[in-house]
Image 1 (cartoon, rainbow, N blue to C red):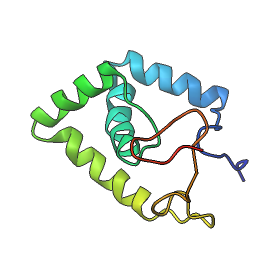
Image 2: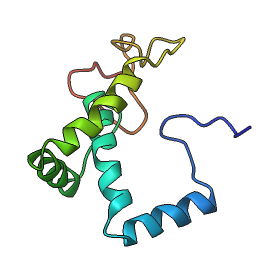
Image 3: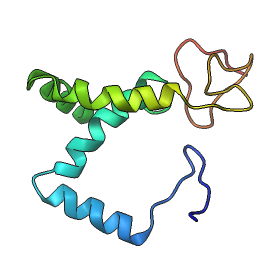
Image 4: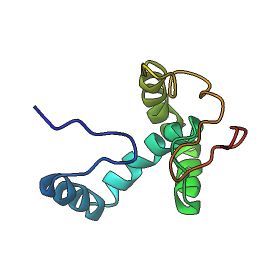
Length: 109
């Protein structure tokens, strides 16, 4: 069983890093698969997309909606995440601030 990881504090094994780099070398396939996932995460305020990622997401959406349709299942899975502290299952508790990131509209401590 894999060691439990936490959002923002996860790590990749050396093999995962190797296969990601290899996937990026192959016409950027791994990178282009990552972009819609980051878009879904950004809509939940968990990450910020770079300018390049925003650009490629728009390009993917123009191409028959590929970016959008790749994002939908990820966003659906995120909507089903249950957190006992209520941080990710709805509005964060008053005064909550995610480490290293301030989502727009959330109160600061």
